[in-house]
Image (cartoon, rainbow, N blue to C red):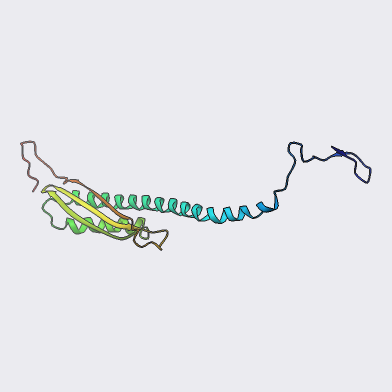
Length: 164
């Protein structure tokens, strides 16, 4: 439909309601529906975003625990075979790594040592990941990482197996 403006300067086209691309206002009974949809969907969107952040923090805390356990295991494996001080040195190194990398990320971190065989030493780091939503105290993300291996020692070629 062609409409001539009142000032007579030119001709402009105005779309009619039946033409494609014409803007049609919604009926009065549909007004406010978007607000209701947003009110219903926003908690789901926020919960999904917080869940993604929580999973990312859990993965990072797990990496911190694994790095600390590996560093503690390196100290434990390289300590002298007959030394009784390797446990304190290994747990101290693992705790130091947790404090250096992620002290607020891996809460209540503890390091323990163990020997599975006389010449194998292991370090285990246990802690809990920080919670994004503290309203759920039962939802604790406990993280445990263990690393270790054989003690590094010289074994002669004459068939000797004893490191001590």
